[in-house]
Image (cartoon, rainbow, N blue to C red; front, side, top):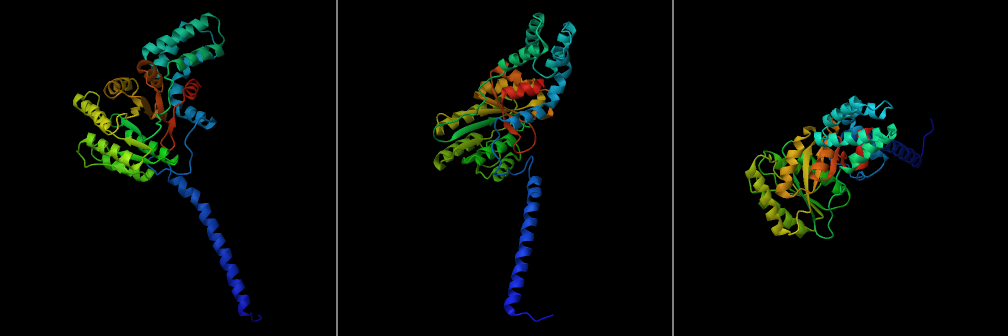
Length: 355
């Protein structure tokens, strides 16, 4: 083997370094998606590049998937109506039972059946019967489903709801979504009563990379909210999301304390809160109506975030909330992923419910 000059050896070594380095980079790139995928899901940090959910075919498909159980509960009742069979009293009774089982409520179910009965008497086609039912469902859902906006200063969102409804998780996901859109977001740990609630919110703050204003456990929640509101104004925050204690609606003293939180908040910002978001667990069905009624009276709820909609056959509670309380469902939880907190769209919901 001939002896090589030093310059030639340098070229050979340099080429080897480039080849090996490129291979390592390829390996790093190929392994990265698997790592990111393992970090998604409930309780995980949000992935920054992902866009805010919006109206699209993907959203319609996600509604369809998330409402599978509710749609299944309605299937037998709808089959006799839109399946080309004769619409008799037995078929109408089956439809009413299915609507009640899906938690639309007895009163609403009865009214919907009367609409279908009238259309059937006029010899409507199966498609026309379905359209009549669809139109009636849409008419009973409150239409203004957009979250509040403000022209200047921080948008203040007060989040209320009972323990176990998914309130803190909803706050974390909402904060992450606002932050991804380029907003300066702050959280206020106003749930000072439940053990671990403050730490749980701080964890979400870290994941969403947003600051959290908090006092010690057992402190005055109104004081926390007041300090956070002042801080949001002083720091030029775009969105302030305030957590509150998971009060049971039967506990009047605690409900009174929630009213105090709102009064104190307005001392720091007279027009706050701009949005009072009530988090309801969809799996509790008609019990959600009782919760919403009391919260609306105490703090003037402006909208509902309905969680766990994918895990229940009682999706019709969306209709009941809209018709009986006039409250729009603004956000829905359709899964455990960070992006499964979706804007609510009535048409996508009704179409997914009816199949």
